[in-house]
Length: 473
Image 1 (cartoon, rainbow, N blue to C red):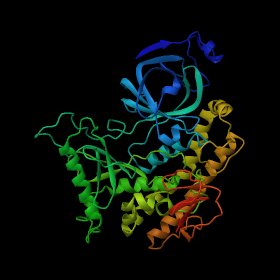
Image 2 (spheres, helix red, strand yellow):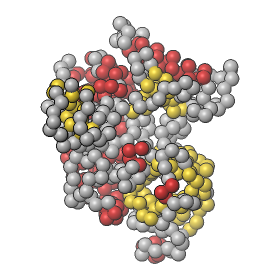
Image 3 (spheres, rainbow, N blue to C red):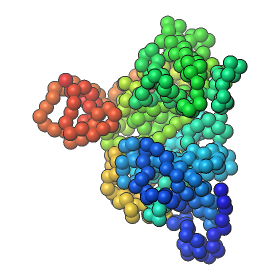
Image 4 (spheres, rainbow, N blue to C red):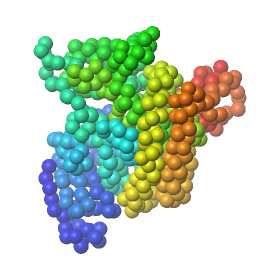
């Protein structure tokens, strides 16, 4: 890394500098220079680039030999593309109190016209008690001299201090190595469990990817150990004595972390939450811990595929919940789980979570104001970019909608969580009920499969048609 002092404060105020890189708005600016052109960046492999970050005070830090690749196949196909970064050496891109690492993300948030849903999701997770949530640094991004828009520079989810702060296993393992932890894991239905891979499948079909130790250093003993341990948890969850507080599933699960993660998931109402879930295990600790949370682009009523469901529980109606995350269905049969969720939620409400979130939204919207205005000159705010359910003509209207949606969501959860804690049930909404119909020649307006792929006509089985789950026979 090299630090360079840019031109005078007066020049910065004028938006000009003597160097090639300068601030675009009042946010920090990230400049990436590629050797062969931005169109060569893809999701399959990293390419070598040069990166410079211009901070608000005008100082420039150069990160030579930074590797860049696209992030997410579906999202990378959009006009505004997200990226993964791998620095040559570790750095604290978010500042003191945040991770010191090589891996980072530039999130485009193209389908989120508030540009804030991921930041709000992290804020809620931390308020709920999660020890870590991906950090937030809003930046203007330029690649090969072309302005790309407003981005969120954020952490990669990995094991290290100020991220998932558990013991990282040594790269070299022998017979004396303690391989009980740490492990970073991800529930991922789309993972491929093949011979020699770092993916394993439980006896009930849950596909788990081992994110750490890395696949290039992990050995078979570690894979076997963590697969066996997760299987012990699953077996305990479905055992006859599963509710026993000592010998039941809680022997292998940190219930507080599950409650924190679950509250964040339901509060944000991200419909994909149960399709990809991080959890981890530390050394010499039998309990699995849920978190960190990740990816809230479709949260707070921002998904046409899911439809308008202000009074729907994601655990009951979220996209993929019925085929990806059977553990939560079982856990929601435990009365103590619902009581713990309700108690934690009531504490959050009593401590002013709704007002705190609205204040955070206002604060961050003010930070983003100038950058957002420039971003939407490039990407019109009233034009659908991804899966937005509603569109507005102004940034202020998008912020107002986000605040109203989160407030209404909190009101619903107060009632729903109390009902469940009292032994009642929350009915599925009309939009979410699975309707049994036969194939029809009338083509619906909007059709997706359960993987989120757009279809021209419905297929046999479950489809998402105009925001509803429809079973085609």
